[in-house]
Image (tube, rainbow, N blue to C red; front, side):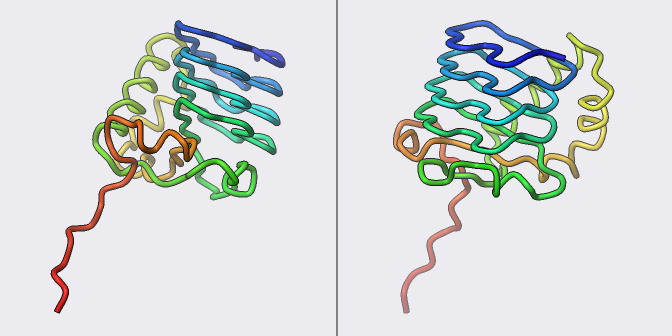
Length: 159
């Protein structure tokens, strides 16, 4: 639905597209909040800020050079890990309430703006579907986040 390099260098604002983006989606995004339903290769490349929610498949080399921001990829088939640039990224399920609220809120806005049936179905089955998202963050951002990415298990005393 939208072509290559959409949101190149975006600094602010929101984009909701009920369809796929082409290659190099959100390259150098530094502040926009976006929801699309899939993207081609090199999505979120060199991203420095903002939030990207991808409600469909991604292409190879997702997040290459990403140094900031957050991405969420809907991954019901478990294929995303093979397409991420894991040298500089961490990827995990969305388990912290703060991040889940951020993700759900953006999907809700996406439904309001686009009337996306795909997003509406994900929200209708949220208790099941939320576990199918992968949260992606640059390793160098971990110490700067306002909330942890994962819930740490309670410490057990050594015996």
